[in-house]
Length: 193
Image (cartoon, rainbow, N blue to C red; front, side, top):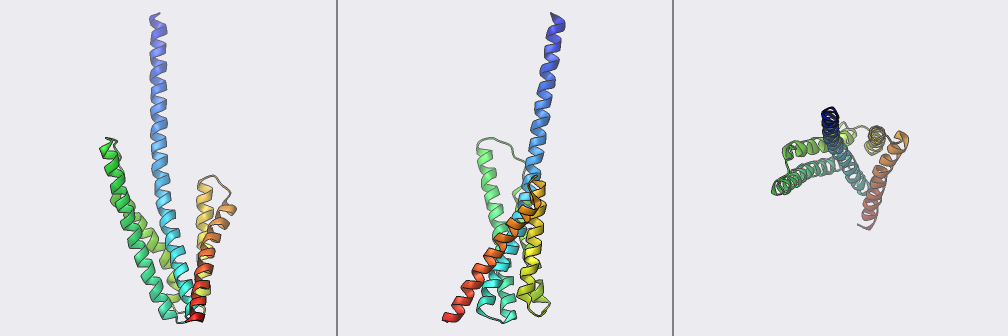
């Protein structure tokens, strides 16, 4: 009987350790997924919002300086908003977890800085054709955005074990739709004004 109870104890300990390892792996996977989420969310938001704003302004005017200024203003507003919103929502989350006595080691500052930087990075890339004053900068911005959005969508679909081609097309389509809608709105306002 002692041998049997010893085996049961070891089996229970092994089962406990395996469960604990699974929990740690799950927590690590959740942390990595959250990091990827912030990167994707920030970069795509920066690209799509900036492209949508410059498309809308380009629909109303052909003055590339005005388009660039509008794009920079929109990008900075979006990046600061994303960073601040991320910080405030994480502080709220931390407060709720603390009130329920659940420990969470995620720092709100880290996530908000990541959102701010990736939003800036995504939007700056879309503004490059306007900043270097090449002919047809809107066309180049849209092509660049399409290429980057497709790449991001494909890469992150692959990370999620989804079809990369479908992920790329899906992401690029959302971005192009936003640009088309705002261009049309800007164009209509220019006709009416």
